[in-house]
Image 1: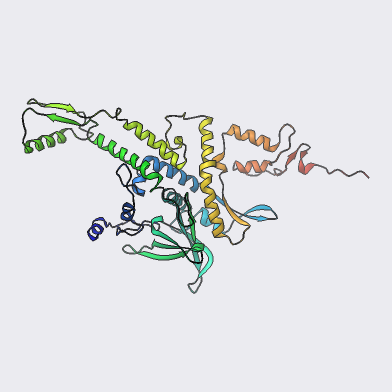
Image 2 (image 1 turned 90 degrees about the horizontal axis):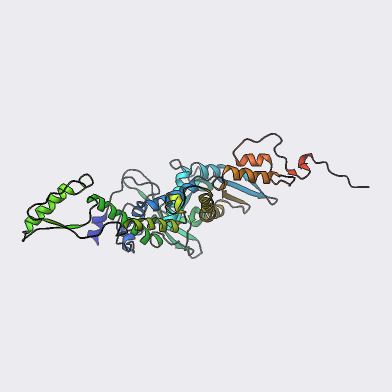
Length: 426
């Protein structure tokens, strides 16, 4: 096994604070471990984070979901007398602007979603502030993402999850710090198949064959065009050729006709040589239809409408149909991820049960301007109907400044602030 370790060992020059372990010695968290634990797809290719993300459909789906979450503001609320009230503090800056000096919040949330979508789990260490004596306090000073392959989880006897992590700490060379992080100090965002310790890895289960087949099709297409987009053929000569003559003819033909810039050069045959096709054309082999199906299959796995990753072959590229699909994406796909993120943030960041966080998706669910104006008219009160929103509440949804006197709620008798209370009869 030592010779295999030496063969596969690589030096990672651009390791990051959330990067993968730069060694391949068979331990958990390395590519060798992943390969040895059934990382080969039925298409015969290894499926890991790098090969999967090289498939355009996977990259587009992960980028879309990660970008959607990263673009949403996170607001904090407290419930007082049954009413929710928004407030901000230092935590708001960490969640929405910069969790660490070298991380923006959007980069962190994209990293979280990529980890969750590919590995099933995402891990973010809650960084606590230290006092003058170097002792950790309860105050939250930041959030540090950790690559899922760098984390092992064990359930302690008292029921607390403990996370054994390797975190890149920088400096000269590749310096990795081992940390034992207890559950209260780790944000653990889970996915499908969570069993109380870990979720199912999409790379090992649902993506292994779909992404593997798509990757293999891409590789085949690349080789197909690299060989001049010509079907396989044989050069037939009368009589017998020595092995040296065969090698010379094969090399000469490849030098003159292989590659995209030589694909259409005319072939010259002499000496009784004949060219015999041995395979069918790519359309008959259904290569293109296979690649189209893999886009739909991968989009189905991530719950993304195909048109949102550029696949519009079977649908119109405009109109209310796609608009409703896009709104459905927010309600049925994105929201399922957001609920899990919100619940984990709420239970780990707040001691008080009346405090919580929420991702604001109103901007993604907005319809066209005609539909919005019609709904606002009903909300404000039309044709004598009572309203349930004020003018300033409507303007806030459109990112407009409030108007003086715009906080009046209209009823069937007019603005509620202008109504004169009736005096009971004596």
